[in-house]
Each structure stands twice: as structure tokens, then as C-alpha cells.
Length: 309
Image (tube, rainbow, N blue to C red; front, side, top):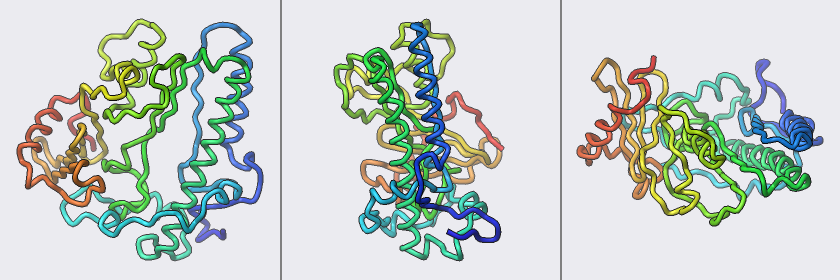
């Protein structure tokens, strides 16, 4: 795709090998490193970080071809609408300001929105394959049944939800991220847990599973109960924050998002019930003041900065 005003296009389908993009190089290095670690015959820890599906949505064309563009869903208008209440909406500055779109706007051009979502899916499939190469070498080296594997992401991404293309907000699709944990001998391998957990739970989970001493003062908790019983509920809410005094708290049913202008003065309050409205199409704060107050009380004692500027 041609560049616009010197900017990178938002997506690219390059007709070339996986090694045309850095994530394949990272997988190569991870495979090489794992061979060295297993040869040492000592306990080891390895963290492997991939880029995709971060913007720009660029991947080899072969991974685009695995998806039928006609089957890429288009969002319902209610889910894709900009909130009409005081909210944490933003104008997708990274997406619109850093990348060229050839005068196309996905909010008004459904075909372009579908193309972007197609490209995102291609990037996810591409990076899945690179992670698969790392898991394959574990099996080849005979270490698959002796290694705990955690796959996780630092955040999610909105692809038109709330008329946002990006992250930088506290809505569900920006904060919800993949988390998969594989433990040798796991009794409920492949089961899905609906418990609301946090990234800060990953470290205590690893320490617990490896039988290592647990440092004091951690905000996270081991997820061993959910690994043993996928139906086990979470024992604490999930917390998040963003600049401009924005904070959120999420439990099994509800998410509260607040923006604090001054100490104790809230500019906006958003409340969503995911059992009745998973698309966050209605702010239910006025309908459920008791839920708002309960979550505000919990948020007031949360171990995150009370104000972010």
C-alpha cells in the first residue's frame, strides 16, 4: 500500500516469508536460546516478547489468505457508536495521527473497517504461529512436560468499538487480554475460567507453581485455585488506571470507570453490566447508584495511584 504524507500505512500484506517481519526473528532467537538452556541441565526462566498484533497491522500475505475477508464481522452500530454520555472516549490519536489511511475513515467506510479487522486477524494468526514454533521446540527437546508455559498480552485493542481504533482507555476491549497457563500434569488442561484476574497475578502464580518463596507485599495472588478448579471465582477485583485521573475497577459482573478532575471531584462515572450489556452500549450508573458506591468504596482502597496526570 502507498504511503500517505510520508506515514506508514495502517496495514500491509507483504508477499514474502515470515522472516520479512521481526516476530519470526524473535522466534528464531527463542528456539536457539532454548537449545542452550536445556543443554545446561539447570532450572531456567525464559521470557519471549513478540510485537504483533501491534500497529501497523502488517504480516505476510500468506496469513491474510487464511482468513476470508467476507467472513470478518462488522460491528453492530450500537457497539461502534461513540458514547453519548460523559466518557473516556478519545479520538484514536495513535491510529489516526501516526498512520496513513488514504482519506479513508473506518467509522464511515465499512469496507475499510473490515480490511483493518482482517489485517488484525492476520497479525494474530502470524504471531500465533511464531509462538507455536517455540512450543514445538519444547516438545522436540523433551521439555514440554517439564516446563510451565504462560502466554499473555499487555493489553487489548479496540477495533471500532465505541468509535475507537486503539487502546489508551479503560473499556473492556482495551484492558481484556489473552492469558493462557499450561502446567505439566494439569488436571483440567484446556478448560476455560471466567474468573476476573490481573497481570499482577502472573508472578505469584509462577512462584507458587515452582515452589519458590513468595515475597511479601504483592498485590497479585496465585491463580492455582483457578488452575485446579476453573469454576473457582476470583477473590479480588481487577484494577486499572490511565492518565488524566482515570481509574477503573472490574468484578465478575460490573465495570466502573471514573475520571477524577480534582481530589474527590469526579468528572465522569461510567458503569457497565457485562451480563446484560457485554458491548458497553449503556451507561448504567444512574440506574444503579448502590453498585457505583460499592465499587467507589473498593476503588478508594485500591493499591494504585489515586490520581494520574
